Amino acid sequence: MIIEVNDANFEKEVIEASKSKPVLVDFYATWCGVCKMMAPIFEEVAKETGDKVIFAKANAEETANATEKFEILSLPTFALFKDGKVEKSISGPQAKEMILDLLK
Image (tube, rainbow, N blue to C red; front, side, top):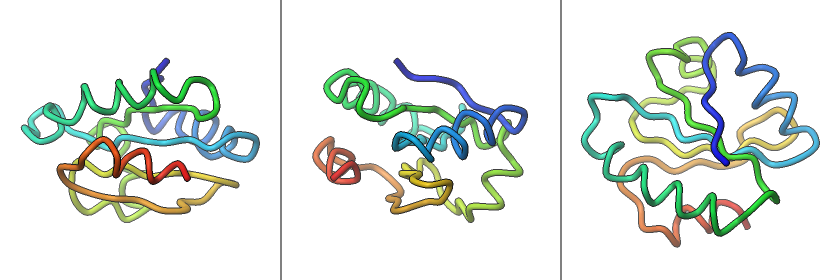
């Protein structure tokens, strides 16, 4: 399952949740062609990984505060949160294996 996050629930759904389980966030925009291309890959990783990780999608326009705070400079960016902080991230078009590597 993939949850949608925005500035109103980002703190609870990502920051707080990452203190008990890793949270992988896909920062995207609706107008971003690469983001649209990566969406099915993100969904596939979520299905394969199951409930070991929380998967979240963050529309950069609806998470402007979080996008700025965590210095998300390009889209898409896949950021792995642990203990309330970004542990690692990758940006741009990625192979499925690269997203899975974030989870290791």
